Length: 239
Image (cartoon, rainbow, N blue to C red):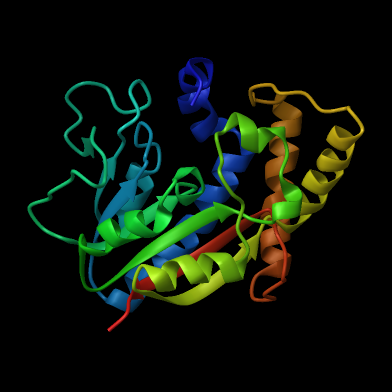
């Protein structure tokens, strides 16, 4: 991630309509998993930045984070966030739930990474994954974020299976945003795109965009639409 992006990232995660909307979708699924487990969860948010989601996750149990990127993680003294990679992490106890929120698309070997995730899970534990969806939706935003791929349901399921996981849920979300990104891709093909850092839009636009995604969520929940700008999966180690 570019240093300029790191410098503004914390503000975006807490205030930008996209991050707030993704957090709402994730927390909805975490609540369902906690209800199924029937007890407080031990949760690890992998790639948690400065831990913006940890206070919300704490409603469902004990929440910790991993963030290896220099300058992106927590202030000194925050023991709930470990400034190290998943591969080197050796916790005292295993977790009921690992969150991999827009992580896999950055990795050269996501299957090996998922294998490391599996060793941190309690029996019956799960991973909750979000990734950018739709190869046709690739734009300069993907380049800026150092993405290596965008996923569809089949490609994500194949990686999970290769790492020894069985997916119990797949769900596309941000449906309207997929159409907007398709339009952006068209503009970029015509030379109308530019490589620029994301920023916080004007307050009215930030509020309106968030409201639109909340309304979309209410209207489309349970419909299993076959497209979206993002894809969510819940998976458990096979066997």
